[in-house]
Length: 346
Image (cartoon, rainbow, N blue to C red):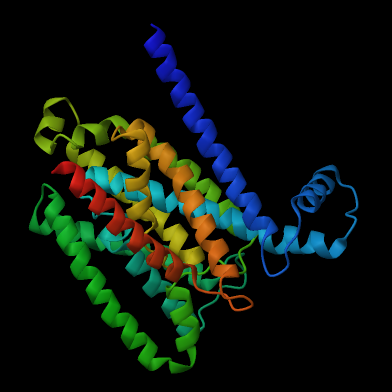
């Protein structure tokens, strides 16, 4: 009885610690930048904004509330979304190298946004940019295409078939993207910077879209945690315990594609978040997806928030693409994790 109570307390303190680290990372990212602002000033500005009072320094308030806060919110939400997608994909495909981009969804979304940038596609009557709309449409269209081809080749939606088609599709999209750049050389810098990932200029509208999508899609994935645990022991065993393998796989794939398409449409292609973060979190929570999925949200938010902070400050006043930072740090962390896991398995 005492052991159970101690285990529950440990779990509670784990969630409190993850939430506290996430809040600390976000506060640090809001305070630190090209113009550093003390924590006391930040809290005073937030208190004035919440109470409707006039800020003591309008310039500081403008920097915090109009520039940094919406960006930090979008960064944290994108990190949480990409990480939970990676954890779900690794569990579904039983592949430690899988993440949300395995299906080619990120590549498809990038192509849509690149087309919008290259040819100036805009819908002024809508609150969101043309790149965001086309990225979301191409992400969902990519999923439909890959699933249709998978069904034509293998009606059981084999994991290996989906992964193979996702890789081939990503290579195909990469060639088309190069073709787009060839026909729009004047947009090369803008397209290249966007495909490397950047959340510069994020708005509260973007944050709201990310929050709604994360709440809906994250809830769907967490509710399927037990099914993902069953997938871990094999699809045949999952069927034996009553899991509708084909339906669950389709629901997860569609949910992940929608969430990733939204993230890519707002922040561009940001790699390694969904690949590395679940591995780190798995070392803390274990393989049970009931804990792994929500904990991955916190871990992804922390990782991407710190990466964005580094992107803004390491080479200031110049800003680095956040995808460059996540790929650099993520590749190093991935090698370290696999080296330690490989040594412990011997």
